[in-house]
Image 1 (cartoon, helix red, strand yellow):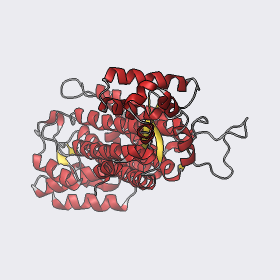
Image 2: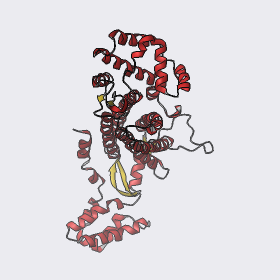
Image 3: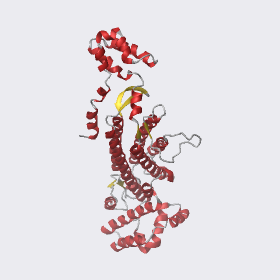
Image 4: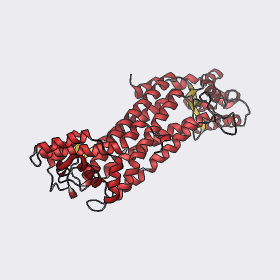
Length: 434
């Protein structure tokens, strides 16, 4: 990803020096295991660690060798031999390139998942704080974009908290899914390397042994990982779109923080646009766009082909870097979100009490009116309000059929806003615990 949408920790995980260091650790741990079971001299395994730790991997030199060999792992191994010396002949014993590449990718994706899980933790903390702050701030709930019934802004944020709690669990599961190691040699038969080497490398690299690999780790694992990133991205977009809608001039119930000196438009000095959440919508699309290639990578030819390789070299870094940035940006939006309760109340009052129609409907049925008749009576008085012809309560009180069932005071009592919030504590307890 371009620097504009990148954060240093995630970028560093995918850069060339980090990748080559992981490759070396895989090879060196394999040498330790080979030495332990008597395949190579223990002195050689020790020398490999010592000489590599004293040297710096020269990325430019590896690239230079690869231009000739047309093979990245061979180029890396050749470079190792340049400063390890004769003991380099023991490196990569019985291994194939995929043992290094796939195990490295598992390490990188596992560590990327750790960063993303921490990102979600930061977002959850921000959502919880703002949800508790606005637990009983009344606002209008909307269905189809149209005023429905009252909710609280705290409930909106609690819903997002619950959603990202599920996202966190999915990321934990995706990390578990991807964290496997394959050091099984060509076509995965362990013909030239002992399975104990794989077990040792897996333990040292924080992975589990892949139960059965071909020449690669099965790509259904990777597909699940990227699919999970896509779901998390969709949840980011859902909250971003909610904020964008609520910031529209005609609504203006919330607003992205607008800093001193910030400019909204090159042409119109008055503009305060929801640029951060619009950006989050775009970034979410990017992450989801990387899911389909990951799904298509599952179907490889026989024991392996490399059709997956070019895809993963791009979507591995780009999907995790993009989502890391998006989660951090969303956390900042939530933390600094400007919330306008007075505008929420103004919007609650816009429809002249129509938001209480269901209470009137139910009250009529409780008084013995059939549901069909009750609906007809309520709708008959609601439609003029849409046209600006009076307020709902006054029209109901003037309706003789309605008054046969409900007194004026009973009707007034049905317009109590607080009635809608009597279960807020119960919902918050379900989401946040006691």
